[in-house]
Image (tube, rainbow, N blue to C red):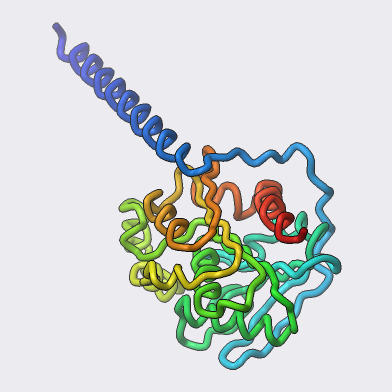
Length: 280
């Protein structure tokens, strides 16, 4: 057999083995996800998104000047919190849809977007900022929906200030850095420089959330992750099982951000399905 033909056959075998292995892995992921409420978000019947925010401003809190945008002027207050490196713009498409049913407050976390950088950042400090924002704006039992770091913030607010929220959705959160999949952690380490260094360092060292912390949560909680998210499913399940009475959903076919950041339709359906039950 000629050398060239052998190489082609060898490459073909490698590709076939990789395809079989990938198929087996995807099958295993699907099987595991089905055990924890695997869902598809139906976006076939949606209201029209509003045209834009009704207000955009800054508010001075004890340690930070927090930037925020308000969408809609009716319904229960709903706070949206973006992920690491983002801003309120990351969830603006969701806000434009949700403004049909809620008064939406989309925040820029400290050291992000147009909010100030007071020099320090942690999930506890961001949770304190959210608490102070709620108090300053005189919001009564607002709902909160957070994605990625925003999901961690939602959890942190809920167990640190148990009586503050009316309910929350935590999307794509993790209890500690070891729960993140290796390829994501490697990517963060390779990008650990420049203006994102402080934010990347936080992802590599925090949070350090315990089951005892999560057990303090007493408000309605919805724990959500993508089927192909960047954290282990076991950690998402741990969060759910540690919070008394919480609900869980795994979004079929989704990765870490595909159903949340810059996808207002799926984010709207997800939020409405949970919060509408609390509205009753």
